[in-house]
Length: 299
Picture 1 (cartoon, helix red, strand yellow):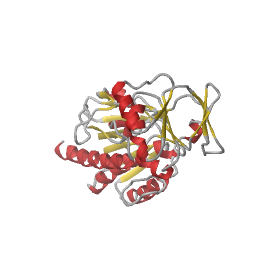
Picture 2 (cartoon, rainbow, N blue to C red):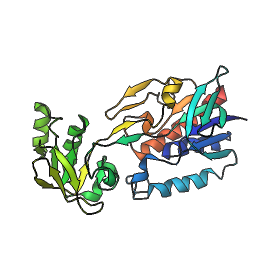
Picture 3 (cartoon, rainbow, N blue to C red):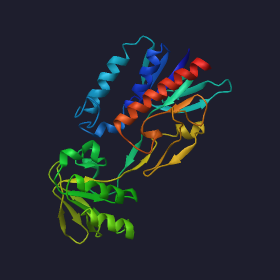
Picture 4 (spheres, rainbow, N blue to C red):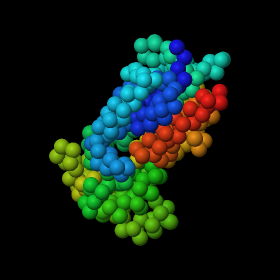
């Protein structure tokens, strides 16, 4: 069987894309490995009409609604390779060596995050170690905030956060603000600390303080850190997608309707945007699904 479209990735973007194609009565295969990027977060905030909902609950509800469409099928598996064939179709191979072909392909697998190698960070990721104030910052309002620098974007992050509470920017002795940035941080009331953080400490997922290299302990209740991001696979590279470089890492370059540089290949969600947000991922999925339907119509 040749599917009208295969969607790789069952997060907010992939589910939204598949829904548009299903409503267009197209034969859709959705393949998902079951490792969404937001699986570490207990709640999804700022999401239209679902503020505070658990991400898994939202995905589960979307799955249930999507699978009610008779033209949709699902495979839980990890895709290992993709290629565009001479006839223009896409060939997708999964980890079990099963092969599937489609006329259009949508990549929506999200990204993987790499945090600084500091004890206490990784176990608290998505709970009290976060990256987006709009997603999780309100719940920590008016409490001591630590920003552990992991790149140039961390300075921008520190400048935003005083609207949520008192901020200490830990440069780690590596990411020093220039004169203009320093003036902005001082104007915003940010405290600067250049001694390196060596551990994040507290009971359970809670945070009480930053342990510094000189033995000092600086109080904090939440840590913001900008992780480095990467694709969890080489599918984009296998297909020859043009990439762009964002603040956290590379992402797939697309046009306004999520079409990549490869004809018939669309990309949506965090892997196709420099700005990462659940609602933006869902919206991009809607665009990708509708654009893929139009591609099929004209093809």
